[in-house]
Image (cartoon, rainbow, N blue to C red):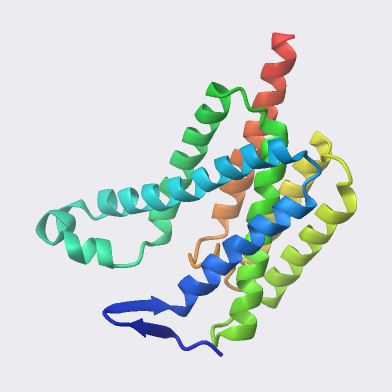
Length: 223
């Protein structure tokens, strides 16, 4: 079992941070080895997903500062050192989706294949992170959430010898987000290390599906 924190000189590295980083690496491997896209497109998507992770980190910090602006003015170190709450993650999500959508349009990257890759990364990362939390830490993990993620991963593997058709991708995202929302009323269903309200999963699903539908409609109209 990992200790709750590891001391490296003046640094304090929490077990939750370690399993989250390993989870992100596991999600990246799942996406890369199950994606039906060619290597060139996988590389493009990998770079964009990495951008998304970095944007999330930056926007979460910015949102935390905005939400605690009076305290930040008085004691900026206290605000930056304190863990970000779920409210900051909500604001960051909107910013990340907006920037990624703008970036995809600017570089003419098709939304449908990218959302396929991004969804694989999110679900794969969450599953690995929760599984490691269950097996190598003392923190509580929702078996229901772990089961949902496993079923979603299994469906992604079984249904995707080729790129997921748009209705199937939308259906899987809806299944993941709506079921996660429902599980919230049974027990806590965190998004990585953030203890979010169940509505977060509905917002995430709405943004992903909305982007797909908008992209498909825009593509059809431009033909």
